[in-house]
Length: 196
Image (cartoon, rainbow, N blue to C red):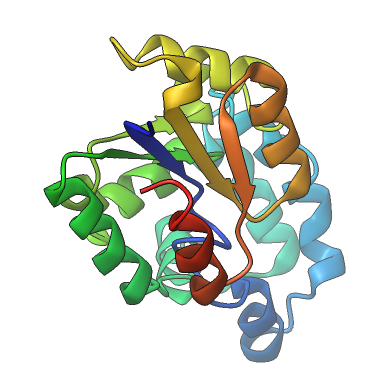
């Protein structure tokens, strides 16, 4: 029996487009320009090794971003504030029925705070397992091991994980928890009939 469900954030609970599309359209800062940051220092910030604001600042100057660092983060986070309300409503029904529901996500600390506070996920979930705190990212199997250690009294086989990336699903299964690939809400509800 499933007692606990873990949900990825981007591509599952949030279903909007990447902010980089609007960033290029509105400010002329292209995807190719931002990739050295997102494939470099940003990755360190998602496992707690570096502060994103500090590593982002020199890139903003290079991109000729006309505002401050905090303004950039606000722009980014609000552009990707696109919550799947149908999924959230379903999750609240699961919680009301006694199933614990957690976030399981790769994030740095500023966006984590935005997700929990400004999106209201702190009230919608029983907790969060985030790479910035765990010091390891999905698809590393250690992410799931460390998350499981923080769920007392629940066996691996009593946990279900949802993610939109196949490699993350495979890592969860390699650790020994049940996992499903998220594609859309209708598919999710059909698959959930097997578990609840």
